[in-house]
Amino acid sequence: MENKFLVQAVRGMNDVLPANIAGWERLERVTRELFAAYGFEEMRLPIVEHTSLFKRAIGEFTDIVEKEMYTFTDTGGDSLTLRPEATAGVVRAAITNGMLRGARLKLWTSGPMFRHERPQKGRYRQFHQIDVESIGFPGPDIDAELIAMTARLWKQLGITRVKLKINSLGTSEARRAYREILVAYFRQHQAVLDADSLRRLEGNPLRILDSKNPDMQAVISGAPLLTDHLDPESRDHFDTLCAMLAAAGIEYVVDPRLVRGLDYYSRTVFEWVTDALGAQDAICSGGRYDGLITQLGGEATPAIGFAMGVERVVELLSQVEEEPEPPSADVYVVTAGERAQRAALGIVEGLRDAMPDVTLHVNLGGGNLKKQFARADKSGALLALVLGDGELERGVAALKPLRHEAGQSECALEDLADRIPALLVELAGSPEEL
RNA sequence: GUGGACGUAGCUCAGCUGGUAGAGUCCCGGAUUGUGAUUCCGGCCGUCGCGGGUUCGAGUCCCGUCGUCCACCCCA
Image 1 (tube, rainbow, N blue to C red):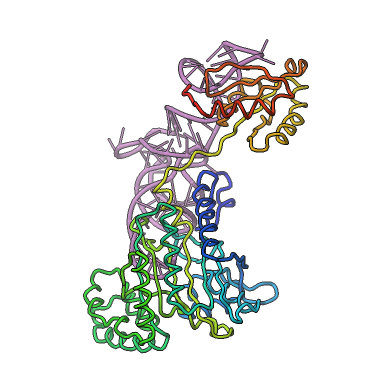
Image 2 (image 1 turned 90 degrees about the vertical axis):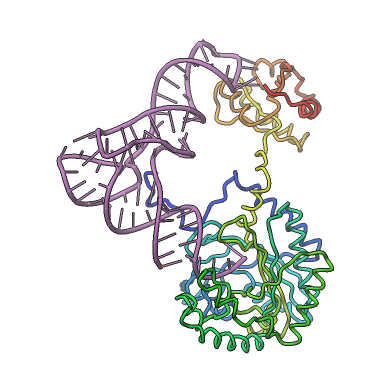
């Protein structure tokens, strides 16, 4: 408090504290197992890449590149950037490690991403993504499988307030042609466009379509649809994807206005949204990027991927389930007397060897017995193990149940490793309120 | 980047129209010097986010700034 202006977290960069870690660990565990079951392999990538990688992959005129990247010059004079997303790095790694020839890669990675945005709920400057990429599969079968895998993930996590939106952006040629038609349309109605839309008319006219401004809805609903201007191959690709999703029983809505803010997407795009998180409602989204790899200098390879916002999914998780009790100790060891205190570590190490599954918390930092028992109680332990000078002289220790009326008993030191696990099973079976 | 709300003890909060701060909880000690959670008694903890202004006097009013939250924007 006194050094507040000196010791301060960087804006938009959060600590995840022990009280909140459960959801993170659960999401990490479930995704790890699920991805392995679908044949995806983990890779770990640098957080920093050359700035030019993101400029070329994401697009020079996107918001991310224009105003959100953490870019700096290192002491060698290179322009480097803290990754704002994961796909560019995965593709770069596939190229530079010679993984592309005849590639059929199923990869996933995770970690922090960085974007300099104004923080709000579900949007932070350092945030975490779990990212999945399939490289070398033309689809649409892999498109459907990826989406099915995400649907299964929500099911396994117990998340229900989500909806799947899909769309096709067509090939980059088709998109370019559509873009001209769209710009022509909006220019005819330029008088009713708001300031944001006028700005986007030059840079990224497709984004005008998902404006939230109520006054814009009339113009937008009258705009020509990308869906009506797809090239025949993309049309087939998308129709087959829809049929496969339907056959798999996965609910979706086709949203012709679903466009992405990154330039590399082509054909299939999808987004899982929720109504439970406020304005930052996209929890998982991605799409196909068939042209990106050649654009970055690799041999032509089709690919599709998605990223999930960890903070957002964890927030959803915390809404659907009680925060689990923090892990508590089985046994709390208290000591009485100087000799017992010195002997305690050795005795406990021996017990850890003999009963590795029992969690033993040893009282640290001294304190009288009153104090030690108060700590034992707060630790949640079922049992207190009392090592006192008097007991040790007789070769015994005292065992006191902390959640039961059952009285304290003595046990020979050499029998503790047998007696404690048996007692814990007994005590765990019938917890009483004291 | 734009707009709005809010910053008081470690935590949760109260402080009416300006008269220099309070509760609960937590923590510590005692009643019980080898036995916890309940009870009772006592104690510690604040430059009222920070800086400036108005005033005899500012937690309270004004300005600036930093931070948090929400929305726009953006997106995972």
